[in-house]
Image 1: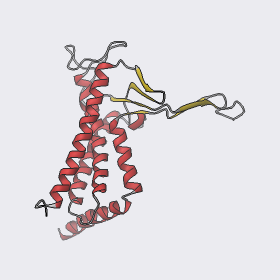
Image 2: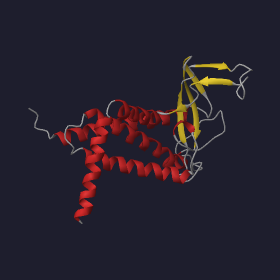
Image 3: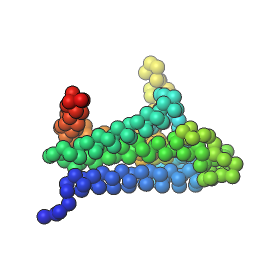
Image 4: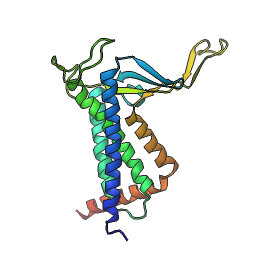
Length: 221
């Protein structure tokens, strides 16, 4: 029988998953940023391309909030998830898959934070077909917390033109799947999907334990 405490063992598993996701995400972003010019695409399969774009917004290129609000919101989310995972490690009978799903979500949010916080300072932003340089002599393209998120995973599975007789969209081209994203985005989506499909009961149990305990501590004070 192993002498390791289960909380420590699961904690190390969570830390390793988070570290691997963040390293993989940042390694791919650094490579694309320094080897592709903005807008450049490389076809691996007809349905899968590496296409370098940047965005100021949320996952999959959406832009819904102010840049600083979004960045600090991500930081707050990562802090919350780390706190929640640490508390949930003491809950008995939770499956390891639940902790892995939480680690994927946390690592995904953290991966995009690095872009927002550091990339504006450490990279320049040359005109195509030039590629970016890390730590350029002339300084970065933006200040701290003003960097843009690097996206590159593009899956144009198929496209077609809507029939002209359809109101509003007739004659327009439709592409599935048109979003371009990164490993951090994918990590968040996979983690959320795992929680919803396989570990919703574990999630409910963990939330009830953590927040009921917080309420009890507050009442005791």
